[in-house]
Length: 116
Image: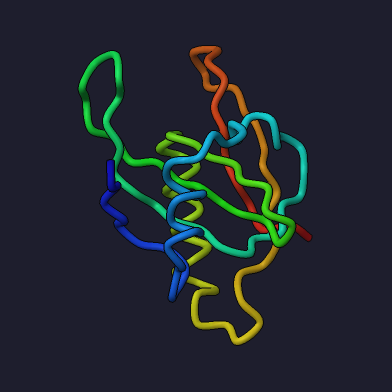
């Protein structure tokens, strides 16, 4: 089933689109605390198999082909802020750090920041 790409890296190949949108990937929570060098990425529409609800998914691929995906709205929003700021940088996107936080209600959430 073809996924609707909302936005992503320029000139994604069919193979990259497949890997980013349909292949089994690691959850972004598995990268928590890590610095991730972004090689390719895509934000796309997907349908939750249990609820049938449409949702946005973000997948990030590293240069060595490792892929991490998330449906975290906070993560996707802050990642898009990074893309908006650095997207036209000739060196590409900076490495990012995946972080987990805890809301005032005690719920865990994922976030992203530029790695220093």
